[in-house]
Image (cartoon, rainbow, N blue to C red; front, side, top):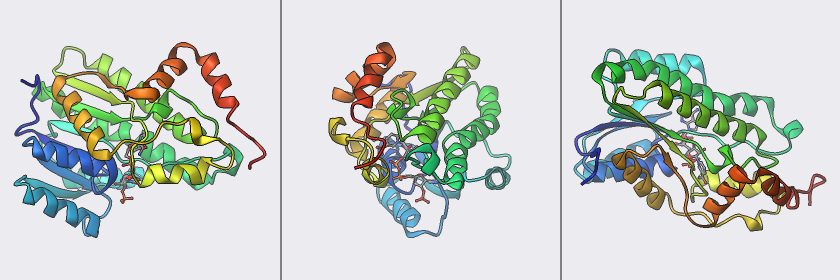
Length: 269
Ligand SMILES: NC(=O)c1ccc[n+]([C@@H]2O[C@H](COP(=O)([O-])OP(=O)(O)OC[C@H]3O[C@@H](n4cnc5c(N)ncnc54)[C@H](OP(=O)(O)O)[C@@H]3O)[C@@H](O)[C@H]2O)c1
């Protein structure tokens, strides 16, 4: 028996039209949740396909416009959300990948990465948390990354955001101890999505990626995420070789950095 069943719980997921967000939406719908798909464009075919897919599963589904790319966009979403009750589960999933030598990254992308991957998460948490606290229940899920701990060259701005969001989750977890609100951090490993396919393009010229473990499916990761929400754990870690890499980065960072440095080639291949 799950400690915190997802059945009949409302779950708002950002970036829910594709990738890991869509898989979490599907897995939670299969467990009986009422799903609110946060998407940049509700009219887009990916959002509509997701709605139909979840309705076919018999789920109660809503699609809502939620763009994290600026403070103004988030404030627009909050106006639309209005006085509604906060969701039982809020999944901060939407993300963008940035990468390359820091001096080669576009300034627009740097700002966008920190906005979507970090600042937007802080803003939305700030707005949703008071209603969860009044209710005395809620779960905030933060989709970080193994890059939040394993800081590779070329991932500077992405890792900065993902490390930051882990710190944010740790602080909010400490602030909400004993209130009934829970915070779950996802140390997401390589997952087969459009973002994963971008990694060789962004990092491949300067980093030998052979030592990285292959990606798992979004569906498999989403099941683990839903299990973690229902079990009430604070952090979901990957399995396999990535777990060992994560351990190395945390406990013997010098060894990890030397290993990564041996795979890095500044001049490019
Ligand atoms: N895949 C991996 O290997 C991996 C590993 C570690 C962590 N993660 C994290 O997992 C999360 C999901 O990644 P994914 O692999 O599923 O990526 P994905 O397939 O590229 O999907 C990204 C999602 O985020 C949405 N999004 C992008 N910019 C947005 C914005 N400004 N406002 C609102 N939504 C926005 C996208 O919406 P559109 O369709 O409108 O673009 C899409 O729904 C991200 O936070 C990512 O950093 C992924």
